[in-house]
Image (cartoon, rainbow, N blue to C red):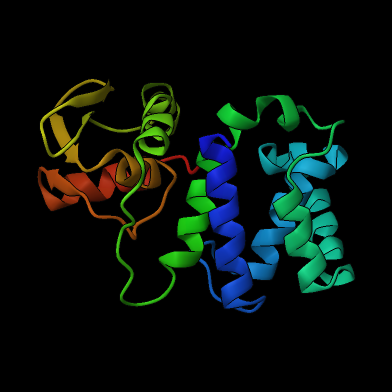
Length: 207
């Protein structure tokens, strides 16, 4: 079982535990909506593109709502658990394309309630999340008004993006993943003026 599959299994376990009406960090979404989103992404190729192309977002939202309402909670979670079908490009790309997706959405559920704490990840999962951070940071921070340096608490530089005044965001790789994905329920430290931090956050392009 690869890191993406383990994270999918952990997400499914959490979904089953909290039920279909639990909050998430995705604005306006319950866990039922989040599960339906994952099913659309992997199983409805006609609607998947609307996740990233705003022009088609209405169609994607309509399909997602249909899937959310037409399936029982148990069936919906089982569709997530079974992973991408053979016809889905995510079947072949699962180890690369799904580790971030499963981790981020798992934390969307975990961190939507007070008292959350970061999980201690196994080494292979942490490595799989760290590997694409350089590329992801260039996409997510393309419009940042300053030069942003991402680093771990041990001082390891993960990425350097942009130009101008240098500011540093420090956190464990999984916290940097969530920060780049537009989440604010993260444990990071920011070296710079509050207004600069606000500008960097506002410039993030959620993944």
